[in-house]
Image 1: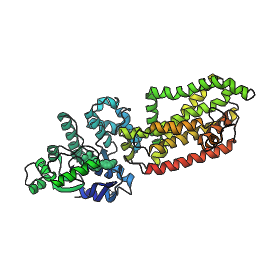
Image 2 (image 1 turned 90 degrees about the vertical axis):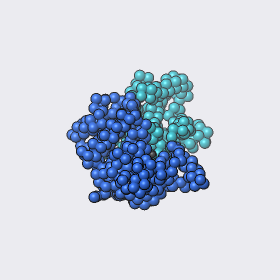
Image 3 (image 1 turned 180 degrees about the vertical axis):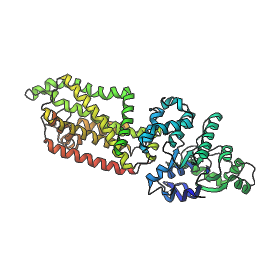
Image 4 (image 1 turned 60 degrees about the vertical axis):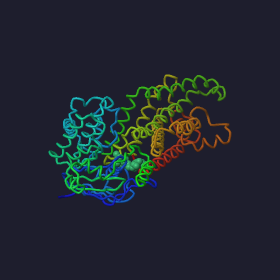
Length: 264
Length: 251
Ligand SMILES: Nc1ncnc2c1ncn2[C@@H]1O[C@H](COP(=O)(O)OP(=O)(O)O)[C@@H](O)[C@H]1O
Ligand SMILES: [Mg+2]
């Protein structure tokens, strides 16, 4: 199988704190890849480097055969991205957000309306296209971001916790959209999530990251076998320990937690 | 393609601008208020001190400049808002180079500021201002545009170094306000204490105002062509600095 994403020795340091520490992995074309880890493990930082928003301290990334650091624009055309936090312009309507995206991604003028229409249909937002985004609910914003990331026909889509904070109905709807994209449009999916049962249900391959290091990777079955567990969630807890992680961006707290972890 | 990107960046800013009525009214209302307060307040004094010269003619280029200055700086600083509310990430992952974004945003901001300046210029007709020589109006438009480019670029340059909205007030009070007041927009730069005189000479806006005044009101201190060289080279300089800083921006 061909790899659409190849990551080699990727590292990101913030001052003295190493958020991502020399990780390497591949993602197969057409697969659904789940990148799992506790809060502060380095998932979002990794995704930001993969998508050219952050500059890596060192390492190499290739997406769809393009060097992400050297052929940035080619790489950017190849992926779609839904960030963990909002990246919509709430003062514009849903449709205006989509048009902005289509123009900066150089979608031919004649195809814009149709592509936007289709992308909105995939996530069930066709009848709300003219609303201001600030009037959308959290779930609708998430779905709109997914729709937007599809307008330029990406080969791979990155989804950073696409279902966090949403009710079960919306979560199910989003996962079924994602599965449909993968099956019907053959888009490779790279996702992170906190919900292990969701990852287990959808992913072909999994990598588990903690403290900036990949500590386990393989198919769900392989990981369960190796950790002698029944569920991915148990395997995850076994691998990453049971201490609670802070959900903030304080590198110091992380360091302190790590110190405490070692003391025990 | 570049044209289209400038167009969409500009359109987005225009929509923000048009939809936020407070901003729209504020950015036209403030210069208008200055026009009234200074025009009627200082007018008679100026006329007496300058042997009958018309203060409205002196003031108008300053007021037009004011409208352009604030709109341009704010549209450049808008990227701080984009950072705060997350849209910056969408800007940065798009398959366009940082240089193109910088150029697109600078022009986008400048065009909006230019529109603002033109609205203001037509309003000054209500106060009795008349362009001294319609033939040199095009030169005035060039100055207005260069002022707009400079300050839109300056706003972006500052914004690319600013993490959040704190410090925004500082920039306004200790950079933009002094630039405006010491540029000669409101009063002639004559018989000033030496320190202020010096500052006014390194104030980029001084040359913008003087050039605009020379073009539409027929009076200039340094000569229109010197002003033109000064403000255009400063615009190029600030855009170059801005581009370098913008290359390093992360979200
Ligand atoms: N801009 C930044 N400056 C300093 N530290 C950061 C920054 N961004 C993230 N971090 C730190 O890097 C670590 C990884 O963060 P992140 O990648 O967001 O984790 P995750 O997405 O796995 O929850 C955290 O400890 C976080 O505090
Ligand atoms: Mg995260």
